[in-house]
Image 1 (cartoon, rainbow, N blue to C red):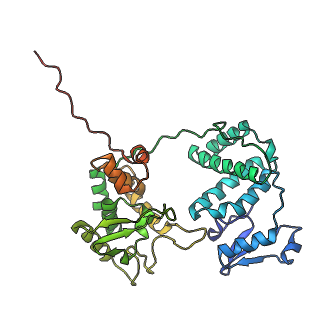
Image 2 (cartoon, one colour; image 1 turned 90 degrees about the vertical axis):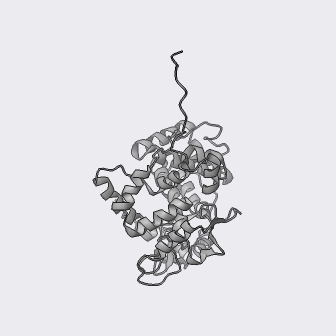
Image 3 (tube, rainbow, N blue to C red; image 1 turned 180 degrees about the vertical axis):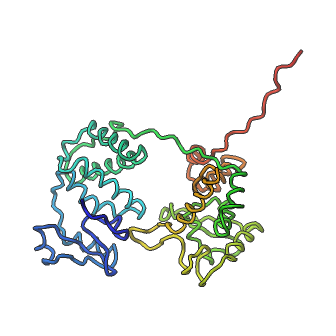
Length: 355
């Protein structure tokens, strides 16, 4: 059995590792001569430097004829162009693709093989994961055409389809949320939920707010999900409720001063903002949430996720349009399909009279 990767190496390409503050490559047997005969070749102190050095040293050939070789090149050339969270997801999918297809020739893959792969992933993991794996597999074939491994795509034009998944419909009632905040959340999560309820912001955006984001009567937030897409920042008016929510957060115990609205004992944010494999990681916050939610469930309550509360904020808005504007969705379809969960309120008819 291969040794399990350490957390800091998760998301890195195969045979890569981060140690001593830099990124290293472990040459495969028989290729050390191209890597100065070193057991571990130092690629660079940053991911950008590492990928540039690897590309120069590796000298990729056109031979991506097998699925395994195609995955290797894809992992080193295509995956790094994605955001950190997507890189992790694709690395996970590539493990499944390598395991199933291995040294199968790329040109030999037909739609039925893709369906067999999809069904295997669903049985082994989940339908949701199977869909993610199919998405990566499809992009692999797109790149294989670019790199000359095959001439036609086996999955386009609905030759292979994903599983149809039902959107999550858990609606957290006012009574449930009040009970959680009163008896289980604790001061930190209670203050967090107050601001969550006013803004409907994603967890990653809330945890990345700096104290200086509050200026000139507004809370300025640049959504991380749409970063780099020329989207305008969100400006929330600092109403009395907003000022009170922020004051409660600032009043939380802080062993050291911090630049962040929500900060750990060491003054750092609850989200990893450093570029790299762990960018966007919120494990510290997630641990707090899970501990509190376990106690909530043991008391006989139905669990809910932190993301369910973004849907609650949207569901409690007066109209679909208001919900779309608050959540900053580009289209109404996402708002209605995923986030409006409360149900449509309908006045009953007059009934059948006795006349």
